[in-house]
Image 1 (cartoon, protein in one colour):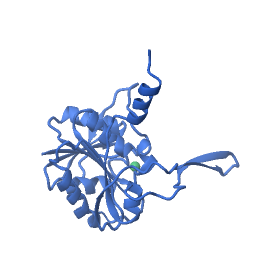
Image 2 (spheres, helix red, strand yellow):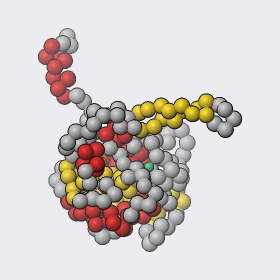
Image 3 (tube, helix red, strand yellow):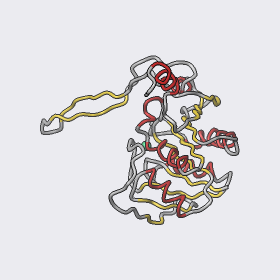
Length: 242
Ligand code: MN
């Protein structure tokens, strides 16, 4: 089995090595990841200049750093290395739950895999500096064991709490609006702004946020079709196009 491992934190992030080690128990691993951090870049692709790669072994893994986005890495990596069956993205330093999924580069890499007909799985953990990847390793392996070979599995968003007690299937938490602008000043007094992520509502049981807050590894199956089916049905019924 062939795994392409990528991320959005950059190829030298400790999280990508941890994910590659977990994947190596299940098959061949190649790392293809951005040369610098690309967090919150979402599903951007580099279309106005060429992209290149440089061989950069990470631990015992074949690894290539790319001067592009996470989605670029997946497109280039699957093109250059045939037969990739799974693209694993992460382990991101920072959760990708709820509305954060819209701008996540980690998830975008997994989405790009799905667009190319390859299974994509995104992994994220809390943004703690002292995250214990060895402790998370059995849970990452457990998730891979469960997802690999499972029928119809195309795209799954996985979020791990620091101290998992088990695994739960979840749905995306969409009740929270988490974009907040916080003003500040630079050292010479010029005004600037931070676009931050902040939960402002209680979470609902069964969602990704609820799972992680309660110590469960959250597994959210996703689809790429964003169509609001119920609204489409209502429009066709109440307001048919001539
Ligand atoms: Mn990141």
